[in-house]
Length: 161
Image (cartoon, rainbow, N blue to C red; front, side, top):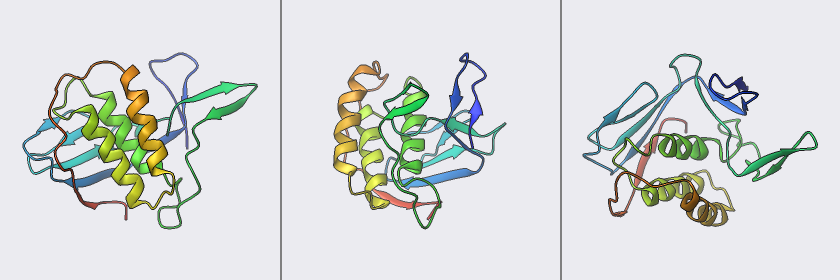
């Protein structure tokens, strides 16, 4: 299900998620909270999809609209367990971390590694190519507020599996 942007003219987001989702990580002592994202001291990352009209994003990028078609990075096949594109949850988490990069205490590398690990957890065969893409593409996305080192990041559990 898609949704019109409230802040960008003629913009329609490809995905809208209406349920809260969480990921348990070992990124402790990074507390943050706003209306869309919460990072607890114990490392749990919560995306607040139940807020307002749901959390909206465009999936994997880059994509362009040309000749009334979408060109760019595919979101992959539908996952049997989630019934969503195989990159859906990884791209949602990655997008929200990049969206609030100026406010959170997570480095770009940690956000990218989390994306990679979520793709691997979903058994996406092109995880390595998408990881290289976000590492290179992220260089053009602007500066991050923090420069924490990317320690060994682990995902212990996720809410959608």
